[in-house]
Image (cartoon, one colour):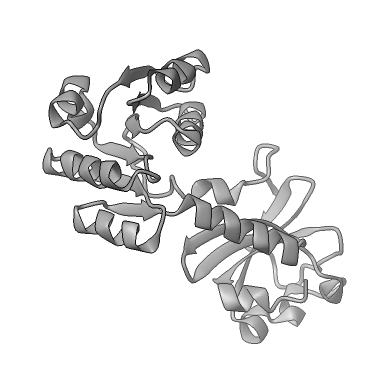
Length: 240
């Protein structure tokens, strides 16, 4: 049986930041409205969530409001607990701290929101040391957007057949990949992906229609898409 995914291919990479956010929570705060912060605001907004954006730079605050990517935006100094409290940020369950390029401000802000009782804090880090410091002061999750973007670019250049990649953790991924010529005409059973490559086939599709958990007798055809899950080294061994 074929199932449509509502006419859109899944953008796995966009799920990385949001996969651990509580679905029942409809309100988020994003502190720092630079390029990364704006991207987070825009994505959350389009997913239907209410976003409160803040920045110390009034120009960035006004820009977020003009772009209509936030429900509310406030100019404030996030290193001042009183300012965060007055803005209502401590009342939210999830806060994303997107000021990773300013080490001291990032760490102090993370400490402020965690000490105030915010239950889930995501913080942007600019380096491994920065990330460790953020974890020390209570960040529940640390993201490295520059590293992730660089990694994605390198993979796209060296593995052009990989259409989308969703990293489950640093060692495992789900990928959409064009069916390799070597796999053309072979059935799922004949390929023995688990035995040969140590990965599992989740779906086969074409033109936005996917067969989930395909039948072992299903043949793979060049021009189609296969969705697999496995370790990154195993995925890299695919003949693509």
